[in-house]
Image (cartoon, rainbow, N blue to C red; front, top):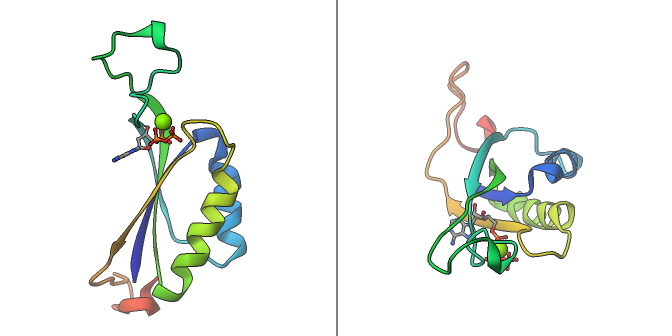
Length: 112
Ligand SMILES: Nc1ncnc2c1ncn2[C@@H]1O[C@H](COP(=O)(O)OP(=O)(O)OP(=O)(O)O)[C@@H](O)[C@H]1O
Ligand SMILES: [Mg+2]
């Protein structure tokens, strides 16, 4: 199993959720976060000194998928979160050792 952590533009969240739903991914956790990438959150240079970092509002999506679904999920997120402008976000992928559905005790991919 893989944990996909995607940081996206908040206004793209609906499209990303729909794109994941279309490929059969329903389980996910969404968090409102603030962050900066390599432009340090500065949209225009004059807004801050070169040492300051502004944090912009982003949405974090965490979704655990099977190994098989992972690549499709990454592509679905890419397509639905893309604008082509700086700040479109990033996708990080981690290996997941275990997953358990609390109600039933199912584990592994059966629990997703
Ligand atoms: N290396 C990183 N580690 C953790 N979070 C990151 C990292 N890079 C970006 N992020 C998160 O992703 C958000 C969007 O980053 P962003 O898309 O601006 O990345 P970038 O590398 O600056 O690419 P671009 O040049 O397309 O803007 C950031 O606000 C931050 O929340
Ligand atoms: Mg950036």
